[in-house]
Figure 1 (cartoon, rainbow, N blue to C red):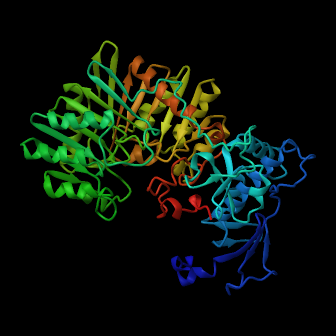
Figure 2: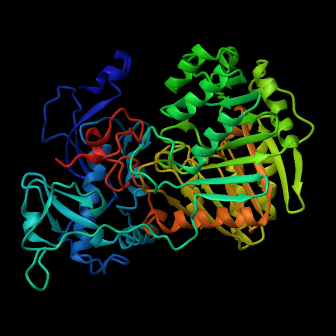
Length: 575
């Protein structure tokens, strides 16, 4: 299907189709719009260099120690990047460069750290990028014979239909090449897929008096399931079933979590007073289909529909429950088959406190009365002393300006470390505070979601440039947490991403918990995830739906929101 259909007639002359890519820097463009390849129509990208397997790099600083296998892998990764980004695409161009979706083609190449210029810095990044790869993690597959080969197997390379993929993503139907997969006794051996590192304490559950904390590990299941089999889901269902007279719910949405959905409906049918608020998007509907179904049954609800007509970008992003005005359930988990099952990484927490429940109830009443987003008034009380070891501060966006007034001061006062598992980070105010913390010697580690890593507003690359360690996750599900752990003392858990919109527009809730045991538990879960993400993803970002994101090509989910699922997605194609 031609991409020309998305442009108006007036814009057509500004876009040209790429007819052929001879090399990453030699591009044939259809200047005259006749869709006919002409050898006289090449465009040369200047001062960008790439690697081919037989390239002599002995006199090139930083690159002279590449093995032939490394050069082969690098060349393949370069070609795959070009295939995804420019081949047969419509582009803009000037005398000096090409632009894809208004992004400079040179920048795309250099941001991948697979290409280099004359600068020592770019060569160093290329060197670090390929040296971070483990050659033994890859195999060559022949899509016709359904055989897999070691990366140095000449028979594998000789095929015209080969592809490199990670061992973790090797389809079951592929068999080992009998020439390159022989052991010392001439017996075929199969690939052993790496096991998840379990060195750190990563229990999915922590409890102390009046608090139950749940870690939903992204390594728990391989694809989303409509089941309630995690401690978090089972606990939420139990609280719904045990409610005596009221449940107040602020929920971004509910979908494919039948046991929770049915528990809410059954509670309503047995006479429990249920009120709820939810989000409406620009089309005045909710993204999660079961939300719409619930509205037909429990009609005591409100949405930000009227507000959205004036301010379409703000969302009601909360995920909290108030049970009998005595307990609060909150966190980052959506009530969905990806949220409560352990497919996405999430934290949820249940706290028994009438004082905290009253603070949340005050926020809920504002939303239920139709005061969404900036229409709410600021609350006067936000702090609860749960016991001698636990203080909790409950904050609500946008009135509390949480990032500016609360999160940044925490960063500024950190003494040893700051660990951040986060779905999305775009705030330059947070970035500047983290840079200053890094300069004074604070250990900073961030785990970033792979889909949002490819969003142009993400600032994780700028953080890396300032020496801050940022890993982009490479599992099928999302890094959906919105959390921070500081110095074995302070924990931040909630619904809010570190973005300008979350701070200034959205309805969000955040808990700042001062408790050493909780912080140590969350630190261990963070380090468990950190250690299971390869170090090479400190330097570049895997595609969310690709063989690099383990399991994403077999999970039945559109991980990168491009309308394509699994083998339909370019990152998952093997032919």
